[in-house]
Length: 270
Image (cartoon, rainbow, N blue to C red; front, top):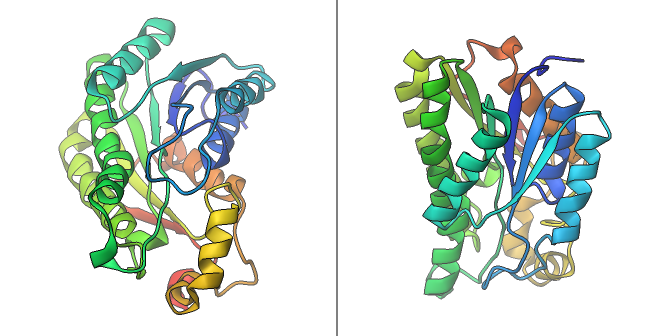
């Protein structure tokens, strides 16, 4: 398909997992892609983050579809780095038509009152504040270009159903919904659409790692609400989410904005 031919997409958290799948899928749709990540660890993350080699592999995946790829290493918590990222994308391609705010991570605690200051700050900084900083940097370029555009934010079923032990994650994903709805209202006159996609558990390193498997086993009472989709799928694949992203940023969804979309295999109806 070629729904994105002639367009440029910027995908954050693109070193691996959902971000890599989104970048490859949009390239297959014809887009040139700016892939953004910050190889290195997050202080309170309890599993390894993506690497520079991971980001390079994403670039190769985009190029395999015959599209141009620009890799940018940027800490999205850093305002100057985010502004430089947006400018670098504009210098390279001259436009940004689709912004996919996907960067994020997960951690957990026994309960809300046992969370540390650092756990709370890291989670909100990465999973919410960096989304705001990214949109703040990119939106003015979209408006100035006058081509309209689309923004999707990666939410979570954790932003729809609170899960004990993940208060900070829940709060960040709930916050993404409020950010999306406000941006959708503000940007509608510019023909820029904004939506959130809420996946259930996805087959990525965020859920398939030694720490999370061990945590689930040690916290059966907390973990039970996280488990099980209504459909016979323990998790969905990253590409299942990417297909929704590709639809939302394409002209096929030209009047779809301000909406939460679930790719949850029936998780929220169980």
